[in-house]
Length: 217
Ligand code: COA
Image 1 (cartoon, protein in one colour):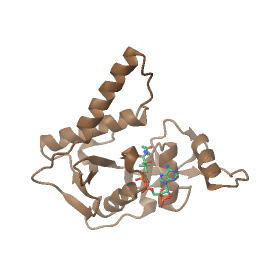
Image 2 (image 1 turned 90 degrees about the vertical axis):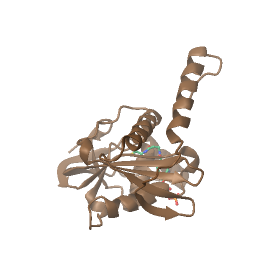
Image 3 (image 1 turned 135 degrees about the vertical axis):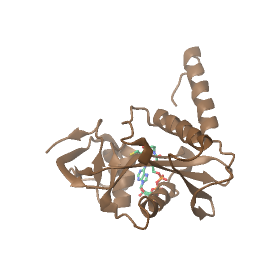
Image 4 (image 1 turned 120 degrees about the vertical axis):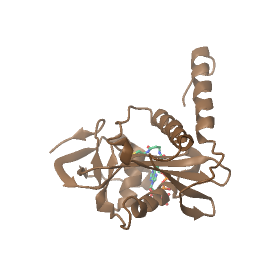
């Protein structure tokens, strides 16, 4: 969070944000956890809407904190009773990753803009961050919508988001492994777009809920 240290109102806001963050990421552990995968640096658990209240409360706290971190209004979930939330729990008992997925029927393909002549990888990332994205208005069938995906800033680029999506693909529908073509990202941020392009192996991945993006035919 950006704030002015000498401004009392800003400082209060910062303190509130900090406290909300600390409390949301703290994870004491539950007796019954739905563990999807275990790694040397942590584990991925899944929370479903029918789970005990304490688990749903934690998911709510995390979602609120993620929405604050993303800094813009997120689209409400389509059908709460069918959402699946994956949390990446670090070995030091913190929620360092969160993915909220929902059932969708349609996605819209991102239209890739031609890149100007770009020399370095850094320039490419800068360009990708700045430009608005456009998508087709032609609906394509999709199954799983990634409503939110977030990784704690200090833990990014360690494949936590990639591992959460891998787990999601094999656990979203019982007995089947979703293809990358069946997944769509909700209104991706610049980070989300860079990630999805890499993960899907194409800049023409599917999106839905595009509030902030630009929609073209
Ligand atoms: N810039 C450029 N490439 C990126 C990137 C970034 N910010 N984030 C991911 N990638 C690409 C890289 O190629 C990366 O592989 P590499 O590190 O070996 O180069 C690959 O995607 C896999 O990334 P991964 O480590 O699995 O992603 P992550 O755990 O860092 O999480 C986000 C990615 C987007 C979830 C994370 O940056 C984040 O939480 N951002 C803030 C919230 C947000 O914007 N969410 C997206 C909503 S759509």
